[in-house]
Every structure is written in C-alpha cells, then in structure tokens.
Length: 487
Ligand code: NAD
Image (cartoon, rainbow, N blue to C red):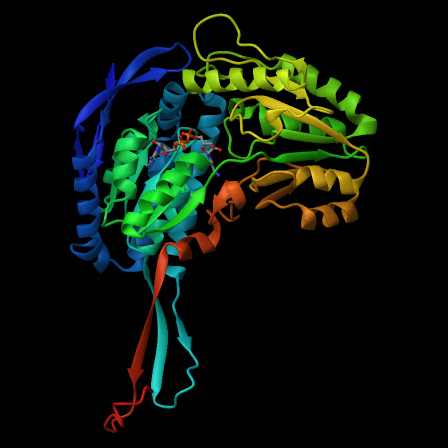
C-alpha cells in the first residue's frame, strides 16, 4: 500500500486519521490517505493566513511570484507522466487522457506565471482638483479551494494558478475519491520553493473537512468545483465567514446536430463529448438534439462507435473507456438508467455493466423522443447519452435551452449564418461550433444557473482573485477646510 501525506505550512504530515483509497479498476484498496479533520483544517488555514501577511510571500514582487510559477510549470511538465499514472490509478481515468491532460496543466501554470506581473491597478480621473486617486489590486486573501475527483490536477490548476499570480495564499482540499495526484503535486509546490503556508494541500471528507474549511473564519474566498447540491452546503457555510464564492458545477449540455453537418465528424465529437473520461466530465454533451431527417443515420453511426469503444484497464494506453471512479457513481448511473427506461426511454445500446471486477459501465444511448425521461434533466456524470430530435431551428433552440443548467453546448452545422444565430440564442457559458470539449488557459470557462457562477481561465480569472483598494491622496498643502462638510 502506498501512503500519502497532507502538505501544511511547508511540511508533509499525516492527518488526524487515515482512510483507504480504492482502485476503481479492481475495487481493491491500493493506498492509504491522510484524513484531515477540523484541527488539520485549522492549522492549514492559520498557516495560509500567516503567510498572506507575514514572512516572505507578501514581500515578493509580482515578477518573483511569476518566476516561482514558471518553476512550478516546469516541474509539472517534467513529472506529468508520474502524476498521470497516480491519477489513473486512483480515479480510473484512462492514462491516454491523464497523460495528455496533465502535460497541458503545465501550460496553465505557465500562462498564469506570465500574468502575475500584468495585474495592474488604475488611476482615476477624479472630479476634485486637489486629489490623486487610484485603485490598487491586492490579493483577495486566503482562498479555500474544493475540488471533485475528476481531473483534480486540472481543476485545481485553474484555481491555484490565478490565485498565486494574484498573490493569494490557499488551502486546497482534494476530493476524498482519488486524492493521490493532488497530494503528490504538493511535492512539486515544495520543490518549486513557494514559502511555507502559501499553498497547503489536504484531503478529507466533505461533511467534516470540506465543511470546516468552507466556514473557517479566516477564509476570504471559496473556489468550489463539484455538484449543485454540495454547492448549496458550501454557500450555506459561507454565511458563517461571509466569504465570496465562485462555483463551477455540473451540466446537462445540449449537443445539436443539423442535417447539413459533417455527420462523421459530429459523431466523433459526440463520442468525445459523452464517452471520453467515461462521461465523468462537467461539460459532457449528454443531450443529443438531432435533426429528425438524419436521426436514424446519426444514431446508427453513434451506436457503431459506442459498441466499438475499447473498454479496459485504465493504465493500458489502448483503453478508451475505463471504470467510473466509485461504486456509488455506478449505482447512481444504474438507477437513473432504470428510471429513464421506466419513463419511456428506448435503449439503443449499452445499459449494463460488464461482468467482472471494477466499476465499469457500458457506453449507453437512450432514445428519449416522446418520453419524459429523467435522464433529460438529471446529470449522470457517466457514459450515458439521451437523444431528442427536432424539425425546425426554433425547436432545436427551445430543446437546447430546456434545462436549469448553463455550462456548455455543442453545435454542428455547415451553415455559418445559422451557427451565428444559434450561438447567440443558446443559454450556456461555452458554445463549441463544429468541435467539442476544447479548452485553453486563454479561454474563460464556466456557466450559470445550476452550473454555478464565476469564470476560470483567462486574465479575468486572475482579477477575480484580487480585491481593489481605493487610495485617496490630497495634493494640497492648504489646511483642510470645514470638517463638517463631506468633501
Ligand atoms: P461533490 O459535489 O460531491 O464533491 C466535490 C467536493 O466537495 C469534494 O471534495 C467533497 O469532499 C466536497 N464536499 C462534499 N460535501 C461538502 C460540504 N458539505 N462542504 C464542503 N465541501 C464538501 O462532487 P463530486 O461528486 O465529487 O463531482 C462531481 C460533480 O462535480 C458533478 O456534478 C460535476 O458536474 C461537477 N464538476 C464540475 C466541473 C466544472 O468545472 N463546472 C468540473 C468537474 C466536475
């Protein structure tokens, strides 16, 4: 059994308790994790608070902060394969994806390294003759970062990178499901030379560790990624410390295919949108909305691709679909498919778990035309696609927007004027036209409604980790006039 530790105040330490981490490909325990509880959380937040105001961190120039981030980026690039293997082992996400994704995570740190000394304040053209007034941008403070199991290095990089660029300090809580890669990443933070307490990385359970962190009185901002129900707990917790929040939650993203689209390309994008990462992706294109005249042809194409997918061991480079991260997740998917079939959905393919060990589930397609399937509303977070068809562009848009989520949307058509019309009408934070699941550190990412609020990625994300201070400087040597009148 491998053993992992928390990283608090620049030191590696065991938590108040320990728990076993399960390899989702076998269902067997493979590592021991430190379980942080209230006292560990308190130590970590205190360390972050001290590092924010005392010691070397606040004295560094923005350029020096950027240099530390460049070093971290280089270390992530160098250790990407090891981190990828840990993530694959601990979460079941296939190595083909983790190795590519983590190599790209280095680019996020590099991007924010470059941004560190480009966060500028401003000078205000104030309406008083004897005053100079400007805005300073200062770090927002101690940030609590809480992430879910899927893509933990990626989902934390889009928080840690901009927060460090802005000069914040932080406590990152890895998910209790698959925390190994993030706990290992702490070694790179240490090696890069960040002062003690600037980045603290812990793991533990939501109701104990996550709750203690999000309501801690010295936390100024909470950057949360996870499900909407947990987000409600986090927001309630933030009523204690009145911390600001940014919430990256789930989705029920529409994937619209018109008859004039390149159907082969659209089918590959739809496979990427729903079966990649075994569907455990917040931007999963889980609602296919296809023009009726090509529905049968497109479903045949998709069915062929879904049935040809290579299900296997996640550490095998040839595997395309690995296990789900937890038994709980597979149970949820099985139950939701059952309810959807009972509500009139028709099974096109899949709908079962393969024999044998591990939390596998076959790529599944549900034809939901004419049904009231709950699969059209509820997030599976698994490899299950729900299908609807339309006759007119207006109908396609109405179906696409018929959701309380608002994270992402896909649109496949060769008609560019139609693409422009729909792109404006679709209610989502990201619209991909003739592509899907593309990301970049340069492009903001996030949604609204049940998908949360706030944006990650891009320059604006770094500004979101700052708060402004308005400084008034009187330039007159004359005595201050009438003190009873506001100037
Ligand atoms: P989750 O909401 O169950 O857990 C997320 C994190 O919150 C975990 O670290 C957990 O320990 C913690 N947590 C649980 N209870 C808590 C509490 N009371 N207080 C504070 N923290 C608590 O999510 P999950 O099931 O691990 O992940 C799946 C969800 O994440 C899906 O809904 C998915 O769509 C969403 N997600 C969103 C994005 C995005 O960027 N929009 C990305 C990935 C995943």
